Image (cartoon, rainbow, N blue to C red; front, side, top):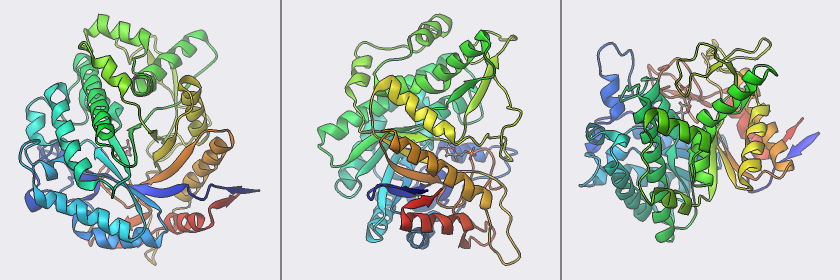
Length: 449
Ligand code: BG6
C-alpha cells in the first residue's frame, strides 16, 4: 500500500540553541542557567563547544538542504539577544540569527523559531527565574524584539518548549537548573510559563504578525497497567499531571479542576491573580506543537507519600520494545494522544515538533552510521501521522529530533539523535543512513507500507 502525504506537508528536523550552538562566550552572549549548571563541580560535559553550530551553521544548512529538509526548527538563545535578560540588546546576537534565517530562506527551508528552549539568562535566574512574575514581562519584551526583527521572514513561531520539562526537571526532580524540589514553586512556575506564553501570543496578534504562533508541549499518552480500578484512576491522575495540566490552560484557558483543587489545598499553589485566567483564555494558538517520544504505563502506588505525582508509579511492560535508554517505542501512542486531545478540545492544527530516537550510534569501519533502528522508528511514526491525517486530525508538519547530533541535557554526547552525525573530536559532519532515508522519503512524499 502506498501512503501518500499532502503536497504542502512540512517535513523537517529540529535542534535547540544550548544543545547545538556552542560558542557560549562568543559575540557578547550572556551566561545562561545551563552555562552555570555545567560548570559546577563534577559535571562531565557541557555545551561550551557542542556541535559548534554557531560557527558552522552554513555547513549545517547545506547538509539540511542535501537531505531535502523543507523546514528547520531552532530556538533563539535569549542571552545572546539580552545578555542581562532585559535592557540592552546585543546586536551581534541578533546578527547570528539574521544570518541563520537568511541562509535557511536562501535554501528554501522554512524557519520555525522557538523563543525559549530552557536556556534562561543567568541574570534572570538570579532574580528568581520563572518563579518571579516579573520574568513574564521580560519574556514579552524579548519576544517583541524578535517579532519586530523577523517579521515577514519567520512565519512559524513557538513560544516555549515543553513547560512540563522545565517544571519537572527544574522544580520537582531537581535535575535541571535551578535544581529545586518544591511543589509549591513548581506549580507557580507552570502558571508563569503559561502567562508568558499567553502574553507573547497576545502581542503577536496585536502586532498583526504574518504566520502562525503556538506552543510546544510534550503530552504523554498514559495506559493503566491493568484493568483494576485503582490503576485506571492512577492513569487518569498521571494524564492530568503529565499532560492535561499543560494542555488545558493553552487550549481552554483553565486547569484540570480536580488537580487544581488538590494543589491549592495541599501546596497553596498556583497563586492565580485576578485577570490571569482571562489572559490565558484570550490567547488562542494557531497550532499545538507536540513533542512525542514514548508512552507511559502506570499503576497505583500503594506507598504514596501523598504528593500529586506519587499516587501512581511508572511500570515497564513485559513485552514492550524499549530503547537502550529505557524509553518505550510505541508509535501508536502518537495517534492515541492526538485523538484524545482532539476529542477533549475540538479540532486544532498540530505540528509534531519533535520525534526521534536516542541511542549509542555505532560507526562502521568506513565511517558510516547505519542506524536502521532510528530509521525504522521515524518510519513507524510517519505511518501514524498518516493514520491521523486519514482520521481528520490535521497535522501540518513533522520535525525529527534532531537534525544533527547535539548535547543531550542529562546524557551528554553519548545519547545520539541526529540525522547528521558529528564527530565530537573533529567536529566533522556526515549524513547517517536515517538521514539519507528521510531525504528520499521527503522527495517521494509517500511510504510503501
Ligand atoms: C525533549 C527536549 O524533551 O527531549 C529536547 O525538548 C531533548 O531538548 C529531547 O533533547 C530528548 O531528551 P534527552 O534527554 O534524551 O536528550
